[in-house]
Image (tube, rainbow, N blue to C red; front, top):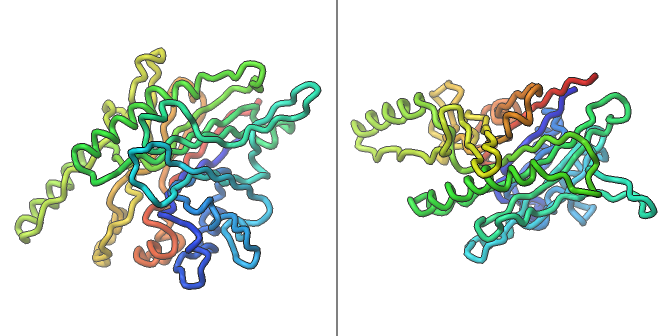
Length: 343
């Protein structure tokens, strides 16, 4: 049985998205989520307490209203560090299909059922501009032959800043904490009397603001810069890469040397200038692969994983990058499909 997990940076989507003058297309956003058959989506850059998804004003259409009654939504404020200069009120959210997944819960004798709602993760909070948003899900069909598992999802958005050397150092530090400390702790948790005993699968996901290194990316950049020099243009700076080995793995040394693998290397952010109509390559209009999934190799042994981007500009916006940027976001969503063997 397969489950489709998504991650989507929504580019500052807030109450203005409910305005008649706003160009955001809530129906289009809902259509992308529905047609790609996501079971759960981790969302970044969701402002205004998530009102664009779940508006309290029933006269206005929200994304959740466009999706229908099968969907549920939870939001939380992301900022936790006093050093942050972010005044947008950025938050995280989880959006999931209730027919496919439910929040994890346990039955406590004499007290009824306790549901584990998504919450901000407080681990290492002083070292992060934005803490991860943590949710636990189980399949709704567990009692009908579906997999008896728990999905533990961590939604993240690392600090970007001015992308200078100091900003990159902070980002590298945040990713090191997320991958080699917070991820292993969440992955290893058993919750004592409040555990449900299910095998768990932990995934970190979101906008990492770094790329996965590939030699062909550097060769392409150098080739482009050679041409730019001939045209008298400034060179394209070397992007920030995840500090990982050649297999995109970071080792959590202090946690039994867990090997945390990061996947999804295709570009997912839109270029700021739409001057590429003559270019028909698959990278046309895109610039960085900032959106990723990370997971522990050993924990996912035996699980088939397919991670990819959703080329939403071509599929849902007529190949018009400028229109997509206005109507949807400056990112496209990514998907991680997990297939579990069911006995």
